[in-house]
Length: 248
Ligand code: ADE
View (tube, rainbow, N blue to C red):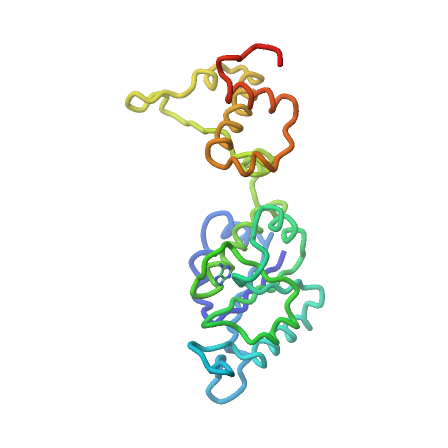
C-alpha cells in the first residue's frame, strides 16, 4: 500500500513513522509512505499557502489553487488514488472504516491547518475523515492516527505471531484481560485457569471476561452486538451470578 501525505509540516511525520510496526513495514517494503510539502505547490514568489478568509473572521484559510494543484498533480501520477481530507467534519474513524481503507492500494491524505481550507478543495476530495469529536490544531496528528490504524491491517504488516482476529473490537467485544510473568505481584495473582493448560476452559474464561469487560467499560458496544447462545449465557451469569448453572 502506498500512502501519500500532503502537509504544511512534513517534519511532524519523521519520527513517528520510524519506529515500531510502521517503521518495520516501511523497511520491509510492505508499505510506502511519501510525505509531501503542500508549499511545494505554491508557485508565487512568497510560496504563499494561506490567505485571509473572504467575509472576514479570525485566522487563515488554506488556498484552493495551491491545494487543488497538488491534489490534481498527485492524482495524475496515481489515477486510482483515494483522496482523504483530515477534518473534524468527516466520517468518524473506527475499525470498520479502517478496514475499508486498508483495502485500498493508494491513499492521498491532505492535512488541513489554520482556520480551515477553501471549500473548493473538496471537489478533489473523495472522503473526509475525523478522528473524533474534538478540534486539533491541524490534521497531522489525525493523519498519523489514520496511518497507524490502517497500516496494521494491511496483510503482512503484523507478524504471524500477532493476531488481528483475537483483539479488541474485532468481534464487537473488548479484549479479555491479559497477564504475564511473574505469577504473583504483591498480593495480585494471575487467574488460576490461565495456568491450567486447559485450552477449552481458557477459551471460555476469556470469552466471559471479554463480555464482562465490555459490559463494564463499553456497554454501548454490547448493545450493538448480536450475541450467540454461549455469549448470552455468559452475560446472564455475569448479571445474575446467584442463578449460575440454572436452565433459563
Ligand atoms: N483536524 C482538526 N481536528 C480534527 C479531527 N478531530 N479529526 C481529523 N482532522 C482534524
